[in-house]
Amino acid sequence: MKKFGALAASVAMVGVMALSGCGAAGNAGSAPAGDTTAEGYSLVSEGKLTIGTSAEYEPFEYMEDGEYKGFDLELAGILADKLGLDLEIVNMDFDGICAGVASATKFDIGVAAISVTPEREKEIDFTDPYYMDDQAIVTMKDNADITGDNYTEALNVEGVKIAVQSGSTAEAYAKENFPEAELVPFKNATDCFAAVQSNQVVALVTNRSVALQLVESSFDNEQIIKSVSTGEEYAIAVSKDNPALTKALNEAIAELTEDGTIDELKAKYGV
Image (tube, rainbow, N blue to C red; front, side):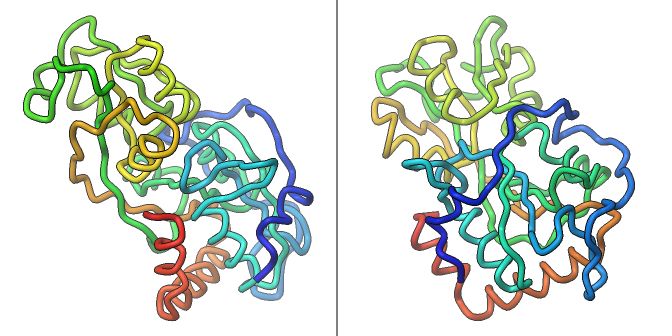
C-alpha cells in the first residue's frame, strides 16, 4: 500500500467544473483518449488511477494539514495499488462528479460517498457497493421546536429553510419529504452545518455517518434529531464506456472485503 499521507504532494486539485449535476441524467460520452491497459480498460493518464472527489465530507473524504484523508480516499489508494497504478486526485464540487465520470476526460472514476440511485445509473456505471448509510436530520441543540417526534410536520412548512448538499441524495430526500419547505443548497456538508450554526436555516439533511462525525468533531452545539433508515449503498462511479475498469475494481473490492481490509477502514474512520 502506498503511503497515504504523501498523496497531497502528488495529487492534482481543480476548482469547480462546468458540469451538470451528479443527480441529473446525461449522455455517457465516449471513452477517454488516454492509455489503454493490457487488462482492456482505459485511463485518462498512463499509469495512474485518476479519481474525482469532493474533499469536504468527513470522514469519507476531507483535507487535514494539506493532506487528503478519509475512508474513501484511503480505499482509493489501496485499489490503485491493487491495479498497479499511482493515485491521482481531482478535488471538485460534488454535484459535478458524475458528469465528469460520464465524460471520461478529467478522471477515471468518482469516489465521494456516492449513493447508487436509478437516476445516476442512467448516466454512469457503479461498482459493487462497499458501504451502506442512512439519512440524518440535524438542528441546533437549543431548538426545542423541531424534534424527532414532530420533524415530519415541523419541517414541511412554507418558509422553513433546510440546508442540503447540492446534487446529493439528502437533497432528493428533503424534496420528497418536505415539499413545502425551502431547500437551501450548498456545495459541501460543512457549509450546511455552518448554515444551521448561523441561523440561515433551521435544519439540515445529510448522510448519518457524516452527521455523526461533524456533530462530534466540529459542531458540538448541533444535534441529530432523527436518523432515517434509507439503506443507501455507496459505490464507485465509472464511465459506461469503461466496463473493464468496473470489472477490475469489483475484483479488487471483493478481495478487500474478503481479507477484512474494508472492515479495518470502517473501524479506523468510525463508520
